[in-house]
Image (cartoon, rainbow, N blue to C red; front, side, top):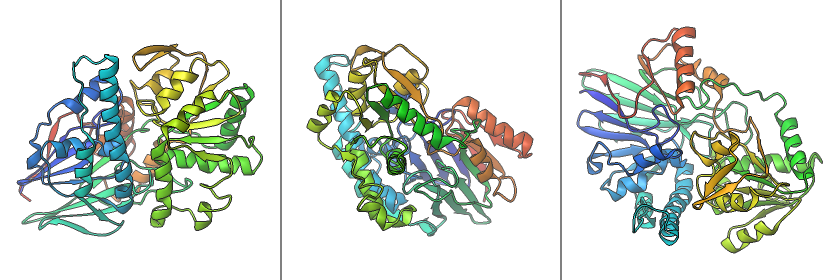
Length: 466
């Protein structure tokens, strides 16, 4: 039996994670993400996959982020009917995130049609709500550290990746007629000793490794993180305006609430109102109660003055309540999605607040190349929102250290758990300079052979005649 891998995404970029394994005649996809960021990447979402979707037998998901799961509705729409394996908490997130993604697709297509800024006379969504609902019917869940049998020659297990609720490292075992081989997919790894989640699990051995490299060449200084965060919040509020934080609804928003509750209860920042204006973030926050085995919180964090029930925190789900936030002129903190400003309610807030000199927009996570968030962080003087060039008059700030991704030192620590170098290592999910930095570390500092940075759509033979 021969085994090949084809990189359909997250190759020299941080989005669109899709890895197609051909194990004999069996086709298994690990992750099925949507491309985000620059237009040239987003256009790939509309391109035909180099494999017939109905011939793919199964999908295994590392976690629920849209750049790892968001293409599933399109896959199903085009004929995929197999099982989709994920952790229990990932299923809970997918029920929220995929339906939300479908709604956004439908709304953006309708908005483009109404405003006439699409090149197409009748703009169509990439997928719709019905497609997303079909995905949910195909999900098969598993806890961490449980062996799942895909078929007679493929088994796998999930281990904690420490990235978001339910995120996993996939350990895949392929049993041939003569030999058994192992593959490890890191998924997105979290840092060590972070609030809310356990540190990523240590993996000791593998034949083939795929490891993410989002911060493969960047070490983040955490030594004065809380002091720095407090200062940025107070400086923003002292300007006499409001503080707007674009935030990922899953993981990042909950971590922000952890710090805001901590800082306010310790008297380090004013007890001003905090508005969580993201239906998905609100629903995700509720999931932490449903899946206690996937985080480090206690039952007390969900009642009284606990983390998610603090008196100054206000959850706004409806569109009507969201619109009223535009009238706030001072002494408020607003958290809204998406974290890279690629869609969602944050666009409406940016549209209104970028021109207000006293307001501050604080970025708290990685901003991929080509996104509005990246352009704002890089200092562009105007950004295009809803087809209109909006001038940037407010203060733009950036907080380093809150990312859900392992930084360079965390990645080195996780990789040090391997007893020996894998036979082949693929550096994925990173912009080119970060992938090169991690590859050079493994080749030069650790002496690993056969370390590759794959190209988009590149294929490799992993095993022959096993």
